[in-house]
Amino acid sequence: MTASDIRSDVEHLLRTLAPAVLGAVVRRFGDFAASEDAVQEALIAAATQWPNEGLPEHPRAWLIHVAARRMTDQLRSDIARREREAFVVRQEWPFADPAADNDHADAAPDHDDTLALFFMCCHPALTPSSAIALTLRAVGGLTTGEIAHAFLVPEATLAQRISRAKQTIRTSGVPFEIPAGAGRDARLASVLHVLYLIFNEGYTASRGDALSRTDLSDEAIRLTRAVRALLPDDGEVAGLLALMLLTDARRAARSGPDGALIPLEAQDRALWDRGAIAEGVALVSATLSKGAVGAYQLQAAIAAVHDEAARAADTDWPQILALYGVLKRLSDNPVVALNHAIAAAMVDGPRAGLALVDAIDASGRLAGSHRLDATRAHLFERAGDVQAAIAQFLAAAGKTASIPEKNYLTAQAARLAQQTS
Image (cartoon, rainbow, N blue to C red; front, side):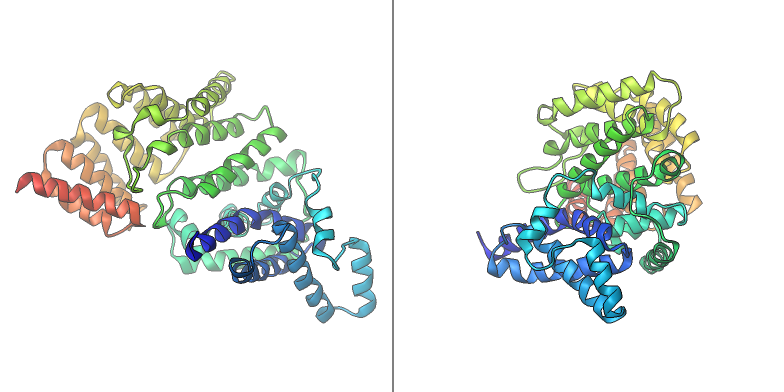
């Protein structure tokens, strides 16, 4: 294994461990902002030491130990000796031995610290947008740039939003717990939206060399299962889990041996995970039969229609168009409107889809997004306007920060150019 491979493995492990480590430190020290800083220092120390010195026997306990040391040092600087000693005694926290930390940290917990951290960050003291941004940064492991991309806002705006959210958490005295009853219900929508965004970033990375980040999508599915265990009768929780499973089921077919993107219609459906599809279909079927329908349930139903088609040509586009019509009425989301335009093009022809895309563009709500150009490119190609399609493929390639997407879009432009030469 090369040094580069070792560093990559360490980085992957650190991304996986970071939320649980932060949850453990926040639970014991209570100060979210200071705990996050301490955990970041521990992660930096691990990223520097582990590739050269090898992994410790208990990586999670090592990180918690180092972060706890940072917190203790800060306490020594901030409070009097008597207060500090009383605090340490109350926490009953063994600082002397990382292996001893492991006995405490790696024992089976009564509850999931990561999930508790989610609910803490989604406290009603924060606006929904601030809560979601903070949680994605602190727990989801997304960079400020990746979150800004998901929110379709400038990175500087997002950074200010996260900073204000941390300050609110610091001053509001938000308890570290999974709330019950109305307190939990008040935060649930934000928690589900965060999980949805983390999954999306994992399934299709917004930037970088890799098409996907399976550490993020896998963690989103794991945590959504945990939320469903808390709320087994909630239709939207079940709908979100179904959506993730039905989407993630296509993972193995989404890229070739060279990592190149393969669009849905060209995928080898024999590679799809039939077990995940069966579980997702069962979930969405059960929840749709209960009456009230939410946005995640509708998206899961759309994913199920795609997954149940044996071939791309067998896809029931009229049903998908109808489902997107209902979803548009529930969700004021420009990406939903764009997907509705694609479904309309498949049913009513590419010109009908292009007209809807033009209306979305005029609203300015997807300004700067490569999705508009990429959708136009495909629809222009279906309409037979090859030169317009080439121009839109190239425009889209120039706007995405994902290397696999950029390569795919550029290759589509080159393919059409070769056909016309």
